[in-house]
Image 1: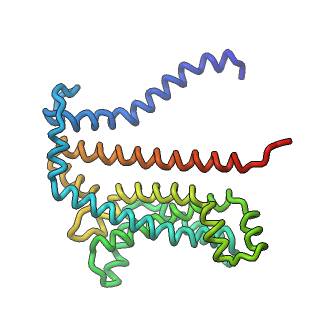
Image 2: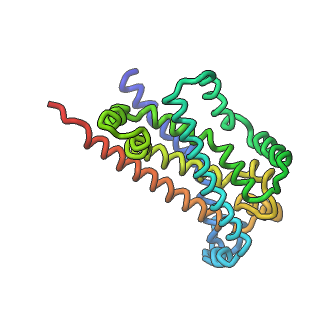
Image 3: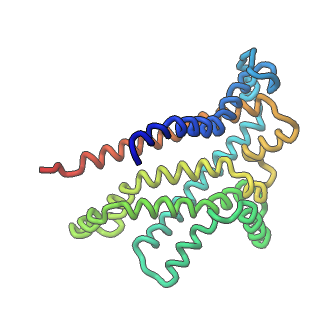
Length: 273
């Protein structure tokens, strides 16, 4: 491809990229603007800006109860998924056993299945076990459904890790358990953080699995969904804006950790003569 052809295509690609990003992010910008609109969700652009909807949000008990429930469920799902996912990733990377190829494909099955199928199957299992629907069943459902995410991320991290450090640790007399805690786990720090943030985000906005497994308490997505059935209010825009802000902060944290890890790896590389 000649340089002149690339030059002619550059404006077209720029326009196409602008349209795509506008389609993705413009609704978010509108949502944030309406969260400050005194006149509600009618009329564009907003002409009277106010913080009253945020003041109303911070005095809304049911909303914050649902936020707390979502945080508890998401935190538990991160712990459960990372623990089981790490064991599964280690088995896939380090062990040889019959049916390993089939096991690797079954691990990815929850990522392929629709959420309604996963939620319905988990509901049937809970009913057959005689358990009561509650936040605990939601936590088990999220943790189980998201194990595949943790396994995939951690397996990729293990594939990229340098086994020479582990071999050196074992040669110097460390036990396999000491090697795991001092070498393997620290080398997986970036993969653990990335998987944890992704699982936390997916759990926070999960609706299908939560809908089938929830009891009397509500999570934030179901609370918002229930209120949207009665109409869109700027208070919903306000809580959605806060969720968006928290998501951006988490992305920035992950990016800084990644850049720090990349910088550390670059410093550890031997200099060329």
